[in-house]
Image 1 (cartoon, rainbow, N blue to C red):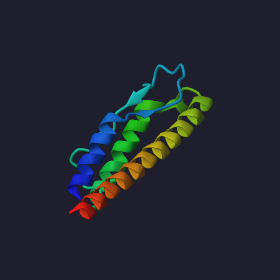
Image 2: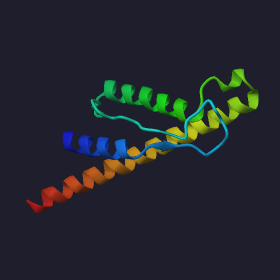
Image 3: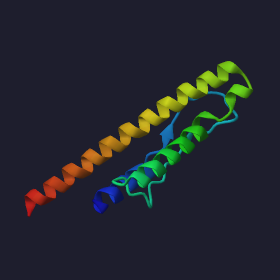
Length: 109
C-alpha cells in the first residue's frame, strides 16, 4: 500500500490543480496538492486530505469572494467544486494506475 501512496504522491506533486483562467487578483492560476505523510487508507488520512484539498481549491479559486460581490462568490463556489472534482478524478486515476502496476508486478513474479 505504501508503494501506491508514494506513486500517488509523486503524481499529485507533479500535477497541480488548475482553475479556469480569469482576472481575479485574489486567486492563483495553479496550486500543488502535497500528499506526503498521508495514509489514505485511514480515516484521519482522508480527513487531512479533505482539508488539503479545500486549501488548494481556496488558493486557486479565491476565498471570501461573497464579501466582495455575490457574483464573485458564486463563481468561487463553482470553481471550488470543479477543483475538488478534478482532484478526486486525478486521485482515482492514480490509485487505479498504482493498483494496476502492483497487479502487474505480482503477475510477473
